[in-house]
Length: 257
Image 1 (cartoon, rainbow, N blue to C red):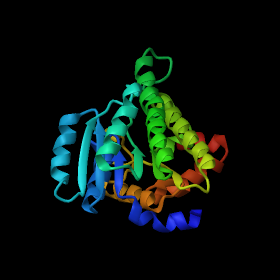
Image 2 (image 1 turned 30 degrees about the horizontal axis):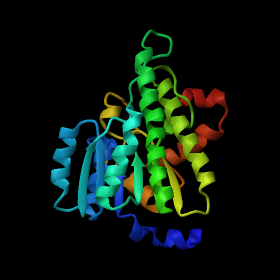
Image 3 (image 1 turned 135 degrees about the horizontal axis):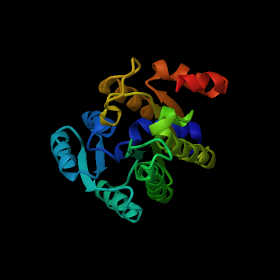
Image 4 (image 1 turned 90 degrees about the vertical axis):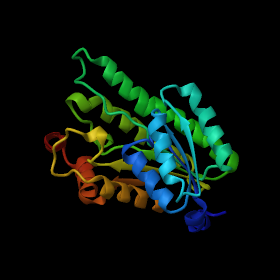
């Protein structure tokens, strides 16, 4: 099938969706949106009690809800969890690599463990998820891989966010490489870059650019459904900010971050 033909049918085929980090925040929000549309969901998270409570709430609306405990830093376990969930749903149409961590400390201040844990979760753990998802998609010869990166991937952030932004930049680079590899194929790859959205990971951040959770989730779901290749979300103010961070001189962008 041609790329044009494939894109024309995605709206009816992306029914079986796996979301990691689904027990709270953006993952929970996306799960609620897709469940309300009657999709079949495979939800993973470390906090299984919260995940099961969410699944119970979503089952009346969703076509199906399967759950599994998953710590993405236990990289050896990821393929088995993804495979079991794919079997339970009868395949996967979309995998949303969302599980992430926002710990961090200024580099060189004696808190290396927090920075290493962040990189292990957001980059190494994400790579394990990508490997598992694409193994399933290659066997099916179809699928939509969604990587939840960050606006911080565009321009490295200082102090406690340096390792976090590096991990998300690595994830974005993985997505770009995969987009080139799977161009003109029935496997598509989207990279989303959320700005400040009100979730636990942004608790304590004070900025006028913070979006409420509903607005942020709606923007993310819209970009996912369009299968955008690269999308800052919400579009305002993050599309123009992304352009500024990519194109303005360092002397200016350093003051922006």
